Length: 263
Ligand SMILES: C[S@@+](CC[C@H](N)C(=O)[O-])C[C@H]1O[C@@H](n2cnc3c(N)ncnc32)[C@H](O)[C@@H]1O
Image (cartoon, rainbow, N blue to C red; front, side, top):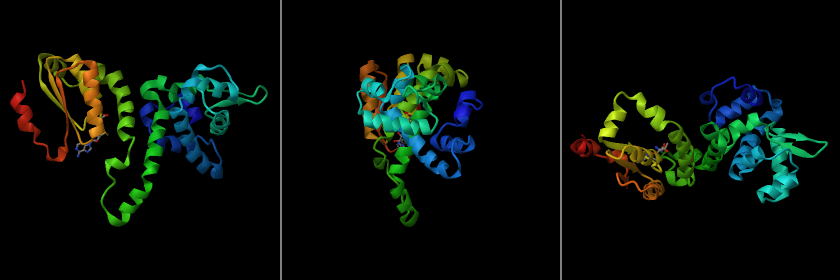
């Protein structure tokens, strides 16, 4: 992974996601056959910890530093920071200098592993690994009893999804995605009705509502948490042309409702 990231031989889309990350670790030969399994498990989990504790973001800003200095700057327990650094050095994500006892996150790694990387932040993806692992027993049970695993079993899903898609929406929705559809931007500027089915925390709707005040936007989602976050953001932004509803969309009868108000 390391060399691939360094050389940027692949586009981001080709190795986004934790499984691709794991496969890359194997392909890049960062560990031998036995150690590989450990690496594939421990390194992404350690990256996820680095994302959640903001240690990766911090290391990107610091000069080579000791574990005491890093822990001090982060306000975290040195014992845990030291163990985390050891795992990250073993995974070749962080570099260490034995003589000075210091650690550094190379800039070319930080470019893919920190919040400043925006949509390129692969560290973010590792949180899905942890999320999926937490529901493994429920998925295994479904193999015998059928059924499914409800959204309520994924307590952090909405927050994770919102953080990830906000990067993409902010970077590309208005400038890249909408102009791909002929005349859509002009129609949005004149004023049309727009529905986002499964809007999550509604950031896309709120961004469009700000940009196109003559259009009307509705977001539907089964998640109360998502809709509450969407409504809160709309209030915070002061947009009045959005509406968000908790709605199970499989029974949604929108065509008539939307067509009746379409321009
Ligand atoms: C992959 S997320 C995408 C969320 C949002 N569009 C974004 O990009 O951040 C899919 C969304 O669909 C919602 N969803 C899934 N099944 C649904 C259903 N049957 N009715 C309503 N919403 C549903 C989920 O709650 C989740 O917020």
